[in-house]
Image (cartoon, rainbow over all chains, first blue to last red; front, side, top):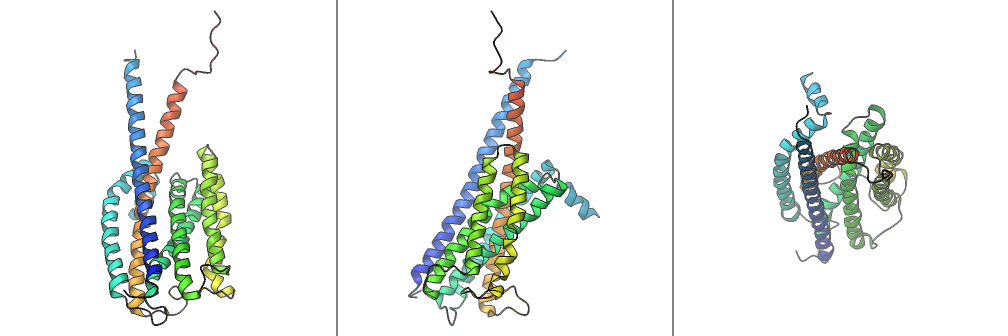
Amino acid sequence: MTDPHFGYIAASYAIAFAVIAGLILWTALDQRAQRRALAELEARSGRRRSAEGPRP
Amino acid sequence: MALLSAVTSLANPSRFAAFAERLTPWLIGATAVVFAVALYLALVVAPPDYQQGETVRIMFIHVPSAWLAMFAYTLMAIASLGVLIWRHPIADVSAKAAAPLGAAFTFLALATGSLWGKPMWGTWWVWDARLTSFLILFIMYLGLMALRSAIEEPSRAAKACAILTLVGSVNIPIIKFSVDWWNTLHQPASVIRAGKPTMDPSILWPLLIAAVAFTLLFTTLHLVGMRTELLRRRARTLRLTAAAAAPSALAPEPAA
């Protein structure tokens, strides 16, 4: 592509790539963090319940 | 009837999360394939425009981003009705997950529009009705996200954001019809308009495929975002339950 406006086109695609990659990364990391936090909380609440021992 | 009951059953957050989890891998695959095709059509197959030259290739990003920016806000406005009228349990989750995606696509439309405007119009920006109303859309997205993070109680945040979203939804028809109502530097609609699109099929088809690719990407990220939000809310409930069950650190110590 030997267009005089190549820089504008390349910059547009670079920005699109950065924004989309950022969105995908942020979405994936956020989900992983929430899954970990929930697993930890569930494990903790499970430990607490078992520490209370069997109810009469 | 069976379809209606299947759709209404998704109002249950657990069923919705399970449904979204099953659908996500298929959506990721479809997004990757359609994006690859769209990029090939946009960068290799589509010819240079007779007026814009190669710069027309920016349109394959700019137009789908702008469509999705408005689609995401419309989705949030419908979800806001769900929050305020039907108190639908998934509606606020959907609105919250759509806001950052809508903001990102609005930013992308503004940035690529500016990069197209400089070589074609000779300026990065003009305060015409289309560009200004689109900038207002971006500010609305940022305002909604700021409002939500400023209110700690989720049900209060949901109501406040739903009201603000509905107030801001007046901007969507203004964006769409600004090019007809006012004399703008931005060109009038060339695809979604009364009558046939004014674009040549050699450019129209790559544009439509790019729009499908962007829509699939939005759908995938939105579904994953909604599942994440459901996890966040479940974690919050567990934290509150644990805090209520634990002996209070603020309780007065018994007198000696």
